[in-house]
Structure formats: structure tokens, C-alpha cells
Length: 457
Image (cartoon, rainbow, N blue to C red):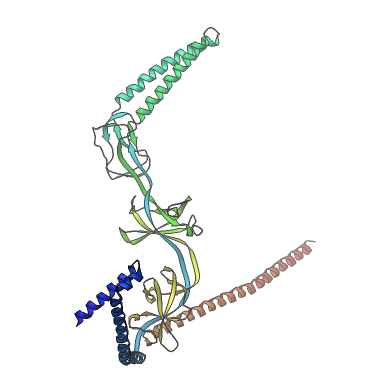
């Protein structure tokens, strides 16, 4: 039976498919007049079956819906009857730090790769211990200098000779005996010899490589006795006493950043340590690709825990924002990108409320919209809550103590202000008395002086 119904359905579908895609529909209907009558009868019978089933099953569906709705009402009645214990806190106002977070790379205060500066030489001696501290001006690497020393002596002798010849030609030229051409040639040869001598002195000085600044020297790349050519890399020197953190800040914060602002960085190597510094420089142009600007901060590093090349998490503190609504991080729940809190009304019933959050710091989470001061939010036990359920605040005494403590602190603060004002007033009152005693003393002195003058007369 089911097989026949299935075959009929397929044939009906094929008939109407051919009818729709036929180019000459009138000819198709004339050729298939008998089949058309059969298909129309099948459609009418199908509509009749659906109509009968609808009216016969309508009471059953309606009864099932009543059962479901009645069960939901019973569930809500049971939820209204139970009490859920939670911990809560009042919404407060406070101050938050405005921060910009980024990822930066650390660079040494000074860093240089020493290279060979003379055309060719053989390493004679290495005068440092790899990985040790060196001071500016210390001899680090000494090359064999016999060739460069002999070159210097040769050019010294040549310069002395040509200088003597020039002085002789100058005397003759001053006496108008020698020719101007001979004088100019002697001068040019003397200057040429002087330049060659300066080059030889320079090359001889580069046979000893000295430390350019105080720092830590790295590992030597070439050993003693090796013959090296010009620009051969030898060893690194790094000054990590101060490190520079370079990081990118989005353009939207460009008005908030300034030189001298505080910066805090952390590295994965020292997760529990926070290194503080200040903004040293801000780039003069914005990166077109990522619409950010380069900022550099200086971090003191006397212990040299931070190394050149490390990655760091940077937190730039751009200022403070006062009188903001704050809640604990534990009070926030999330569903995807939506954040909400559970609030408790005057009847101790809990309701879910959506909020918009802002900055986060040690004081709490800033609420931009959705909450008011003194509202009560749940900080523990949210998983057991549903809208409208009755709650019991388990830490109610602690909340009341916190409120009374804050009020007493305010009263004590105002009392101290009043007492300090009274003390200031008493001091001001005492000052005129002191002035009166001084005036009395001066008047007595004047009277005694007048009496003494009368006696002398």
C-alpha cells in the first residue's frame, strides 16, 4: 500500500515537472488529457485527506498545549515558592584608571655589533671574558699591528721629506726666485703625504678594538689566531641597565597619550613581576597599514632581568576617571558578547539586567550603562537564579558593617576637619595677646628711659 502511494506521488511529480518545462503547454495537455484528469483527482483527494486529518487532530494538539502550559505555570509557582541563598554587594562609585593595553618589544639602551674596521688582520689577543661586564674604553680585541705600524713609519718619513722640500720651495718663491708651479707641486705633495700618514695612523689605532660604552659583552664569534677581513662580525655589546619598550597605540587614543605618562610592563618569564617606567617618545607619523602610532617607554633595569629582544605586555596609564559606577568582576555574567548582572529588588527577588562595561582595574569593573548607585548585585550564586525567584542575602551583616564603617569614616573625617579649624581659630586668637604683651614691654622701656634722662638733668 505504501509502495503504491509512493509510486503515485513520484508519477504526479514527474507529470507536473514535464508540464512546467514543456515549450508548448497546450500541445502537452492535448497529448496527455487522460493523465491530466488522473492528476487532478489525486490532488483533490490529497487536499481532502489533509483537511480531515487537521480537524481530527485539532483537539489532540490543543490538549497537549494545555498540558505544557499548565506544567510551565506549575514550575513557575514552585520557583516562586523556593528561596535561593546568594552573596551580594551594593553598587558603589569610585575612581578607575584609564589604560591602553598593547604588546611591545624590548630593546637595550645601547647595543652594538663590533666588526673589523681594517682591511685585513690576524687576531692576536682577546682581552675579555665572554658574558662579563666591560667598561667604556677597555681594550677588547688586539690585532697584529706590525704591518700597519711600518706603514705609519713609512708615511711619517715621506711626509717629513716633502714638508722640508715645501719649506725650501716656499723660501725661493717668497724671494721671487722659484716658479709658482714648483711651489704648488711641493704643496700638493706635502698634503698628499699628510693624508697618507693620517690614514696609516687611523688603521694603526683600529688594530685595538675598545668598548664603546659600559655594558655586557656577548660570545665571541671568532677565536684567537684567525685572519679576518674588513666588516667581519666579532661580538655584541649590550647595555641593559635601561630598556626601551616600543609598542603601537591605536589612533583613537592619540589625544590621551603624552610623554611622561606611567607605563607598566610584564613578561612571560617573570609573570608575577611588574616593571614600571615612563613614556620617553612618541613617533611623528601614523602607520598607514594598521592605523597606529609608535610609542617608546623607558624602563629602569638595574638588575638586568629584562633582556634585549623580549616580548612584553604593555599597560599605558593615560589618566584617571572619577565618579564612575563600579561592580566586582564576579558580578558579571556573559552570553556571548552580551554582559549582564543579577540585581535584587526591595522584595528580595532577583532579576537579570543587561549592562555595558568599560575599564577594568583593581577597583572593579566600570559600568557605563545599566546600573545605578546603591543597587544590590549578586556576586556569588548566580547559577541557581531565575527571573523573579526569591533570594536570601547570606552576607547581609557584612554589607551593613561595611556601610556603617564607611559612614563612620566620613564622620571622623569631618570631625577632624572641624577640630583642626577650631585649633586654627584659637591660635589666631592667641596671637593678639602676644602682641599686647610686646606693646606693654615697649611702653615700660620708654618710661624707664625717660626717668633716667630726668635724673641726669
